[in-house]
Length: 103
Image (cartoon, rainbow, N blue to C red; front, side, top):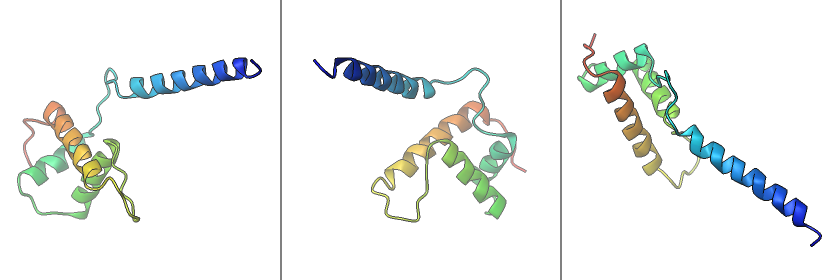
């Protein structure tokens, strides 16, 4: 076959790309997705503190870290992508921020 080596190379590249995607989702040692400020702001929001620009931006940054990409255009995955990011942020919050006192 004329394209055998090209096909094998392409298959190897695709396999490595998929393996990289799978590894990216694994938790990294010492990796803390939420900052102390985000924990503080999320705790305040969960306890009914007034909304502020700073708290909203902090929550948005956490959602983006969880994979949410807000779009000004039509998003066929909305609201599922937002809800998935909210669940991820909730898991991070439970792991990192539980027990914090609101300001």
